[in-house]
Length: 382
Image (cartoon, rainbow, N blue to C red):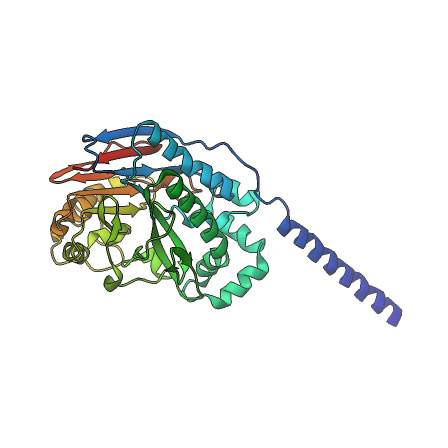
C-alpha cells in the first residue's frame, strides 16, 4: 500500500513537472520577431499655404496595425515610411514640427510577444495571452501597481522598459536624421521624467505623456503629461497638473502641446497665452469607429466648463463638439496663430478609431472627409 502511494505521488509529481515544462516552453516560443515591409495605407496628402521659409506643422495620422508594434524594426519602418513620403513632397526642413497622435507609443506593450497576441481579433484575448505568457513579470508588477485597475496598470508597467526603449530610439533617431522637431504622440509609462535629454522611469503611477524630440535627438524637458484623463483612463492613469504645463521652444517658435481631452479646457489656453505660445498641437485618440458621428454626451472625465452651452449636450455630434469646444474653438484665446489636431487611426484589434486631422490657420479652421487610411497634412507657417 505504501509503495502504491509512493508511485502515485511520483506520477503526480512528474505530471505536474511536465505541465510546467511545456507551459514554460509555450511562454518563450512563437515570439514575434519577424520583419515586415510596412503598409502605410496612405490615402491622403494635403498641403495648405506657401513655403515662406518660416517652417511648417506636419500632421501625420498613421494607420497602425498590431504587426507594426511587434518589434522595434517594424515600428521604426512604419514611422519612417510616412516621413519619407513627406520628404518627397518637400515638407521636411529644419523648422518642421511633426505631430503624431495620442497613444501611438502605448501599443508597444505587445512588442516581442507571441504571434497570437498580434493576430487576435479582440484586444481582451490578446491581453490575456500577454499575461499568461509573462506570468512572473505580471505578478511582480501587479503588486507594484498603483492604479485601481491593477491588471491594466501591471500590463503596461511590466513592459515599460521595452516600450520606452523602442519609442525613444525610433523618434530620437528620426529627429536627428531629418533635423526636425517631433511631437511623438503619447505613451503610457510609470512615473516618467526627462533628465539630460533622455526619458527615464521610476516605480510611481502611470502617466500618459507626449514627448517632444528636438532636432539633435534630445527630449524636451517640458514635454507634457495628460492633465484631464477620461473616465476609461482614470482607473490606471494618474493626472498631471496645470502647473506642469509649459511651452517648448523649437526652431520655428514656441509650441504648446495638449494631449487629447486637455484641449477641451479653457485654462490651458490661458496658461499658453501667458507663456507667449506661437502654435498649439494636439495628439488625440477617439474610439470606436463612427464615434465622431454619434451624439455628443458632454465632457468625459471632468465637469463641463462654465462656458459650455448646455443645450449642445445631446444635440450636436461628437465631431461638431471637437470643432466648437476643443482646439479649433479655443485656440484664439491662447494667442497662437496656427494649430493642428491629429488622431490615431488603424485596425487595432476591436478598438476602432475615428477622427480626421483638424488644422487652424489664424481665423480659418479646416478638417477633412473621413477616410479609412493614413493622412499627411502640411500647414506652412506665415
